[in-house]
Amino acid sequence: MQQAYISMNNKPNSASSDTLSGIQSDTLRIHPISDIFEPTKNYVGLFDYLTGEIYIKQSDWVVNNISQRTERRNGLYLHGRLFYFIYKIWKTRNAIFNGGGFSYLHGTWRYFSRTLNTMNDNRQLSKFEEKLLQVVIDNAYINHLWLKMDPNYRFDCRSFAALERNQAYTCLVHPSDIHNRRKLYGTVKWLDKQHHRLGFIECIGLDRYMYVNSSNISSRHPFSYSNTNVEFNLIEEDNKWKAVNIAVI
Image 1 (cartoon, rainbow, N blue to C red):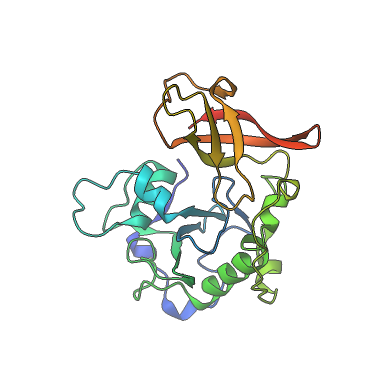
Image 2 (cartoon, rainbow, N blue to C red):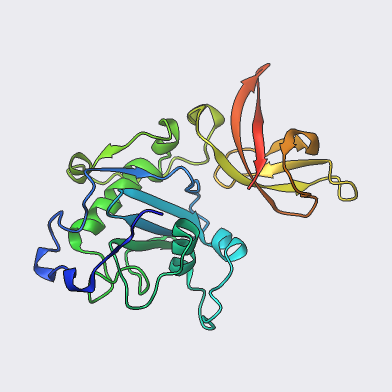
């Protein structure tokens, strides 16, 4: 697991909040497991300053797929659950996370997290970190530019920070705008309710459903229940787009 903490004694001074002091990676990437943006949905995000990885997942997916921490009884604890999904451990209360949390709620991006933004006393991202994320979101995420690039492509951090914001949402994604090496993530909805053989993959943000037969899905375990999570690639064949390399996750 990538080290995600810094010592309590190394907590940065707020006077340096407009510098790159908190972000140690020179490059950044919207991580391939992130979900496609669709403005009617809510999202929760995490920015790891050590690796430069930015994770953005649908809030509903987090709620439905990552169990609540046993000692947490109040609230959804979305950033904590996303942290657990990424690092496979729960963030402890007294640990300082070398990164930040943000979210998209009811049409507004927010750069506040009580769980993750522990490097700053007010739980807000610093001005520089917020601006950098805003530029990344506006110029690479909501316009789906990241999907056109190889999954391993990384943006130069300083060059991105110098860009102006461009808040243009580019509708739903057409398969031709997705790099052929990029994995997509969705859920299988069964049309054949009795035998669970015929169905379609719903991938939020994609402009179509991808119809599948259960024989095309690779799995070591039964997956006949509804809302099976899968990953897949898209290819064009005989002037039609189809899902391939479908695997249960």
